[in-house]
Image (cartoon, rainbow over all chains, first blue to last red; front, side, top):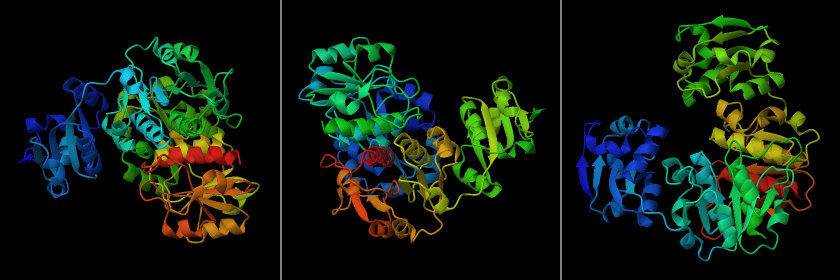
Length: 267
Length: 267
């Protein structure tokens, strides 16, 4: 059973994991350096525990303790209980579903283990927006994708906002980081995947044709601003486009991914 | 030519349109009551002007004045020029592409005029997230939708973030508010549209079948949390679902809309 610890001082050093949650740059450093991630809201806190992550601590207003009693029963981690207004002072905004937890990250699995048995894979290059990363995990799960691979600089799927938008898909979908950016796509080809890069290039073929009849597909997505790097665009086996009305510059990357996943799932 | 006004006091009352841009509730009231909307970034400022909106004023750091000279040349509105750090004090965050403008809203067109000649229409009920509204406008534009209709309580497409995420689609796509929530869908049916509600209801048919061969389609989308109201779900001509993997609760509404628009565009 978690130890309930009532705290009345918002500057208490035991709350360090929960400071200034809206300061993205600060949080990126803090969470990476301490090997933690933050779960926000009763549902995400519960899903994180169910996915087998070990809690470092919990932080919640009194009225959330009973609802999470089943989760708290499974751990010896401290549960810091603060009045709602104090929670807001610590994290920097009003937490709508006032429960938070800090979990230990786990070592990332190898690319080979993530790809074992996979037939449809998403590969994300340098996406910067956590909302997009979360939405892409969710779309991949909805359309039966088996795994997600991230380039070294892609935004963190365990960032609070990505987990929330992803509705837990980041826990149910195997994923890892690609250790080698330069050869990532040739390596996937060598592993039997046809790499299909979503692009606006002139020589791109409609995505329906690009994935037609392909057994093992890796859909490759670029960053929000500039799309794929030249290296990845060239290294992909195929370059594909989602047919759009003339004169429209493009879809949002999360919207494009949803459409591409839908099409690929029906190949 | 706009009048250049250098300002050194961030509390100057002439900057009232630009206060606390991150305070969503404050901004909603302020912008509606004063009949204005905010354009953020050089590209959006320019697109707003090109779309024929009348500027109330501009606010920018000195280095943006030259780049927007063509826009400033077309108006007599004041252009407030402040050092970058002062801009940040006024709006409440660092403006990445440091130009802003406040534009006058225009009266919304009638539903009938928005529907004239339209073959594919999006109908949004009570979406609350401006990012989703913007992304949906963008997806609709990409797949050739002709108009967007909004329920009375749907989030504002002219809110700063919606415009930005929508990449200007809110200017290029005819849209308006539905004055009558209760009879909105029967009215569309009477106007010759088949209303197709996206839902997770048990009796829903796959969206491919629901739109197959339909000449005039109105795709109906519900809010992020609870989906469509019972009234709209019952009043729609057809209830449709995007086929997904078993056990997945749903797609994000913007992702679902992108897929539904893609499918509907190919009917």
